Length: 332
Image (cartoon, rainbow, N blue to C red; front, side, top):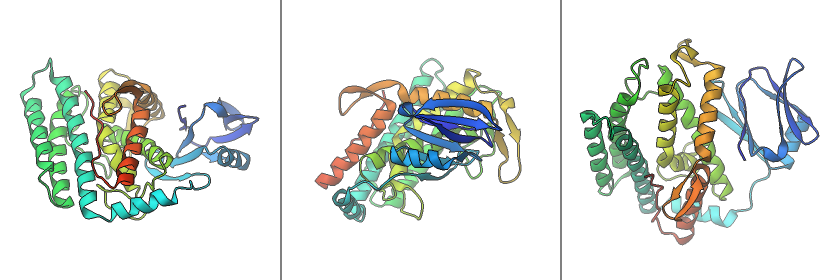
């Protein structure tokens, strides 16, 4: 089931029987039967009536709160899952430096390998020399991850490889889109806005998968544990970042999202994405999440969303066996 996204500022979600109805100024904007909603995602100034809150809690349907730009704020969820023993093992593994480093290495390898595949796929007919050099650089970086002995060194390898990747990735964009490099605080151009927005959606999807598997989303291996940072969810999303990168390319190069749908803002928000662009991107992202691909470890065709869930269960398996032989998700 897909999430229910609400982006209209000033809207409010009401309950009518077993349906969620979105209204603004007494006008009905949309509605959805409760049975078809996996979670509710509110973007910006959007309200929920008390009956809706109680209904969603009773039905174990999470509510995710994002800013208007898509930055994560928090989530409303029901009762905690009874996974005390699993989470105790998770915390023990998380404090084991050797276990954590090996898990982090596997996750970075998955991220860089999938980034490399995306460049290779788009460069088959272009034969762009710069993109070819980045493909080689990513292969070398993947090999170097195995030789890292500290998390800081691994982060350095990942950072350099990611910079090389985006240096080539930008060459896949049509000329009317300006993008120099990946910047996120704050994103200074429409492409960076789209990337940040997409990664926020992906992090939300990964968070749900981690939580459904019974793990603590805040105790990760690659990302440092900090207050209010869902480190494990961020870990899990790394190998799927190329999915978002591909959605961004499709949206802008196909003309589904146009440069004029972004307007100048202030210092805190230099570029503001319009509602139409948000809706278009969300639809493209959800379509991609529902596409089926071959999961290499399970040798079964699953939607991308279910692949993320399968990877979360793979983390559980590593923790249960206390063996950090995590198998990342590789795209072909």
